[in-house]
Image (cartoon, rainbow, N blue to C red; front, side, top):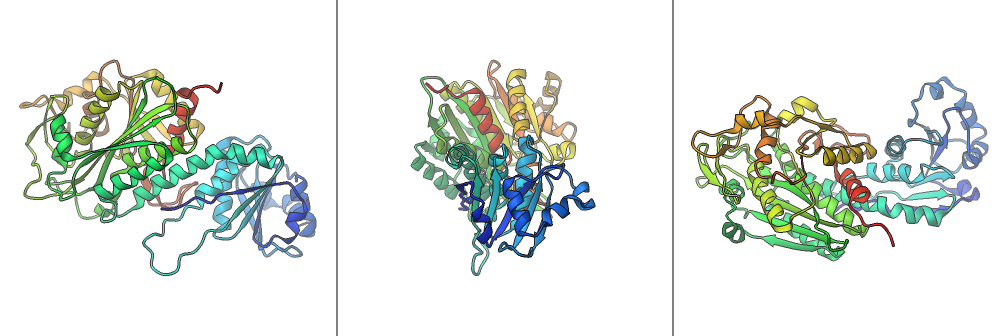
Length: 491
């Protein structure tokens, strides 16, 4: 598994700059102002920063952008990476600026000259997140990641404040690793084993096997894995850091590979279906984050792990399955399988834990990508208050999310002639009818959000905070949701 860089925080000392041979990262205000650390760099580099501040290149730089000066004269450092950043920069601007700086730093050792900046933690977090590199399956010698030294005022306090952000980084990296893994490595059994390892952090982890789910009547979930030799599983992660209150619940779709089943997908692009367990990956990352930072809240994460393969035993279009709730489902398309998994896990979560709220995550529909592209996850909810709360957390962490409509009219599209409901309503409003299907398995008074993350879980091009591939979208937003709204106050 990929381990994030662990920054070292050192009290401000101008002399540290003189002999550092890696890459120096420093700040310059939009007006060209230099703090004491940057002034030391400027002096050593014979006024290079001052001259740069008067250039048209600097003037045209956006706030948060970076400029690299390689092999500067009269200074030991390999490069000077200048971040154009205001003294009161927004957290998302500072994180993205740190990520841009780390992209320039690459594998070199880096020294962030933060001084008295209010953005120290956010810039450092951006640097750590952008340093992610999934190379587990590349042969040959691995390239080691460089170190990160943060030079700042009040280093001890800054290091203590960074603990919660580093917990987020750990959770994001865990999610990215899970989503990036090929399906021959991350089987349902391997996935469950990796989640069991979270017990070392003080979490309680339970695994329900196929026989357990058969006894519970989970015919909807179990139907998806009938064509695969990999056993279907449900993994339950409990973090009990609060009091006697009921937990908040996260539910994730964990289809470790999705061929579409008998409704076989086209060959082109099918290799991307290793990421169809992205919802479960995010739930796992959030739970790891909460455990690492010892969150003072009760939270349960539940993931349904299956593989959707075509086989003589696989379910067929036209089959009827009975869910744990008791509702019957006509399977119109076996490629609309994620909702069949979530239906039973959602019902189990509510009946077993009576949670204060539920958020499920899934790479559920291609339709959401048509609607929102790769910038936003689709947000579907039966509760305006919970929806607003989540969207506020997502905005604070700069993780794109957009609320989509959900109303009784869409439920008409999933009525079945021979069963209670059918698992797809056709192409029209495809992401909405998928959400409507899930809503059938949510109790009327249960605050609930469905997050369709098909467009944001894994992307072909690098984002501001991650290289191409898995993004870890949602870990930071959901962690903030818990921190800001469900944790007990100190004392």
